[in-house]
Length: 283
Figure (cartoon, helix red, strand yellow):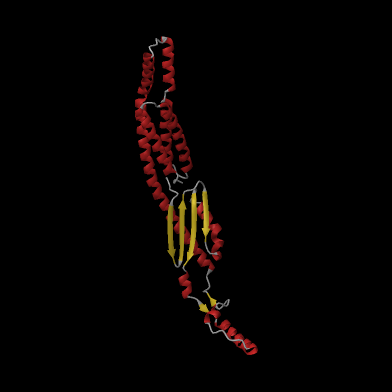
């Protein structure tokens, strides 16, 4: 099944949110952004991702809902009372003024405490949500891949029709060049040696023979269609086939000298380039 490398997934539950973004890349490049206290899971999550994805630049971002934590903040009253007693003692010994701003107390380390986290249960939840986000990303990549495959198959049909049209016009290509040579000789009022003229005609026919290029184009088109039906990572193979198609199209273009065939050769190269651009997004 054809899969796109471009996708996005967002899953949020119980104050935890995962975002996974995927764009095209030659290889598989993975980056995690997550709080330090949960980074111990990165290696495990990376392994899970590599088992499912083979190409693309993947950004995995973990967010925790800080508003929920703020609502559960508490004051360490024992420590606060100790600070006040110490402040009174220092003030009586030195005559220094007391702190009148409550924020100064809140800045003291340990005064404000967060609720304890259950590490095991939180790790399980983070992993579970990551798998859910990853599956969502895979589904989107698959849907995008189906659309890309349909576009490419349409372009392949268009390319095959152009190839057929060029094949039909190939005899006219040789005839046009032979007629051009005969006309030039006639204008120069030169009587050519029949044997020599025949050799020249054969040389022109050989030089302008495009059957081999047309046959190879048909073969490559069939190979692209077959590759699109395969599972796994097919993007690199498709990119290689586009290079082969483009090489044959360039050779074909250099041999076509009539206006109609030249335009068809240009159309062929445009179609191949359009396919190549779409294939850049295929895994």
